[in-house]
Length: 372
Image 1: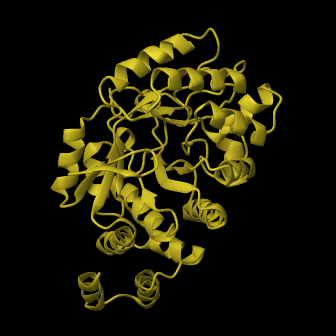
Image 2: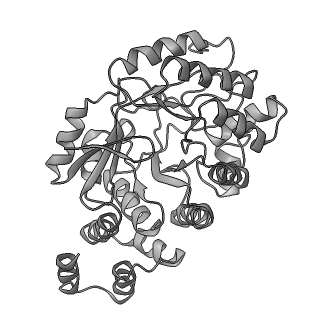
């Protein structure tokens, strides 16, 4: 940090950017206006520099990954999100519904390869309620008791609890007792209600998404948080989204990681929108890292942005490359993301080492399993 401070002190910065930079070095939380100014700043070297000041404060030179795989029980979904390339309706070509037996076969296959975490998300099915998913988790734990289960977005939990005629609190208790250990951050999209009404009109609202995560945190279920960026939002919308997450984190401390999710345009209603540039992606990581000072980890989801961009993101505040995946997700590949997404642990380790950082294998809760 001393060397970073000396570099900073040697820089000639505009007045407002200098004040914001001083806040970063003094560990002072940024205002929303500060964050908007950083988004409007085109000095990418400075943004990366400041983001890494925060990153080093939180995780030093460590960059985390895990051995994980995804299960997507169904792509049949009651919602009609216009940006989605994944959703199908019942009976439509390309729709699928995995049985619990199908899921257990995948669990056995991937745990035999050394996976330590399963990530379960999918469509919001019209007929499957909370007890079905609890049975799924119980069955997974019987087959692989050491496997950590990160499962179900707040949107999925909202619907499965309604289907089961239970409250969110009751539903989460049922799922936790069945084996749920943490939640992913999907379904957040963008919190601005006007934009949300346009891009995902029938999805769980922003206030309820935040409430479900708050309930989970208070029950001892940590979670991640996301944002969908690069669609119709502006910088003010992004900062409003970040600020709502930061406020909830102040109250609960339950978010493990923040994951910016880039809009991919293939096979959906917004296919004419140009995707964000790599520069914009890296800026989004940097500002997120600087502003979200109280969320400990920032993740680059490489199946979405590609391995080269993920590697570069490590210089813009990112300290987590997700995991090995092993070609077990279709959500982003169906929208134009990386085909057959898979990375060996050796490949992730090499990506991290190339950026002069320390590879760390973790579990779901960021306990260190091995340092390389």
